[in-house]
Length: 105
Image (cartoon, rainbow, N blue to C red; front, top):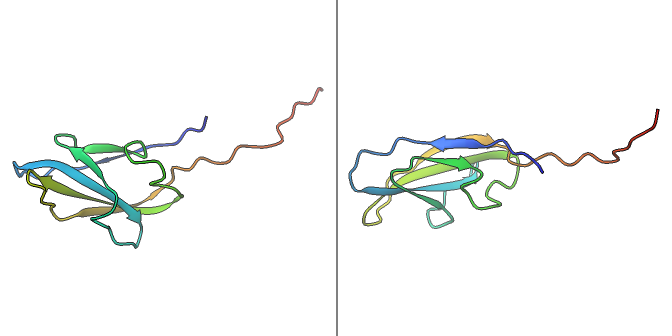
């Protein structure tokens, strides 16, 4: 079983009392964030996620730089401005060694 080193993404929620959740978006570095695309919603008061565990399988399909965007969601569904961070994410385990043998000495 492969072991993938995880990362924790955390943030400080805005002080607005009507914020009920945060939406997190992921895109390859250099690509725009699609507000109509796939996202992960994190309800208050949680202010962190574990990558890649808290995202759907295939979100981080390759070893490359990704941009993660996060915005606050208020109680009527308004979205705030997006805070973004770009980071190298490598959640792909190396291949299995082959031709393992035992030789009597």
